[in-house]
Image (cartoon, rainbow, N blue to C red):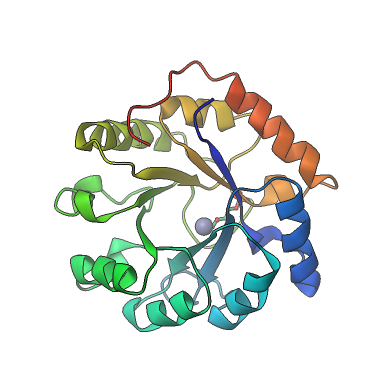
Length: 229
Ligand code: DX5
Ligand code: ZN
């Protein structure tokens, strides 16, 4: 099976006992912890910052995948790197200088991701594909968990997969929003390899079982391993 990764989003965790929630989802087989950062400016919601990332860092031995939905973005990047982030993704609309922001993330020792809203064209990728480690395709509009998957994202995922394949680089292709057991296989068949899931995992009593069921769906994919991973 290709190296699929499941990245539970803590946005749907019980924040009153976040440390315990994070440990439970790691024990249940999560590959990444997806850490959604919202600022009530770039998106109409407010979540958590580097202090919370720093607090959960010693509890987990898997990568922390920080998704910045903040504007401006550069000021906060070093803080997340210091707080133990492994991957930092941002939205191109939130940066005045995309190339500089990617460099800033790399300079701080993290992998860099570029995130695309449902209506954001992929054009932003054309001059920086060699500088990204991850492309994040939003399959909902950012700001809230529990929204419905926007089917238009499937074509976009396929388009990004084609770009990654032709680049020959091991760029991760992550999809975020509305991922459930009943659509994860279709999303993988479109070309994704990394799956953010918030409400579908944290909404269940047994995290291990839901992650295992997602992996069974992925194992049944009609697809050879995508060329670039
Ligand atoms: C939305 C966030 C997502 C969200 C996904 O802005 O970026 O990571 O938590 O939640 P679900 O899986 O519930 O759509
Ligand atoms: Zn996210």
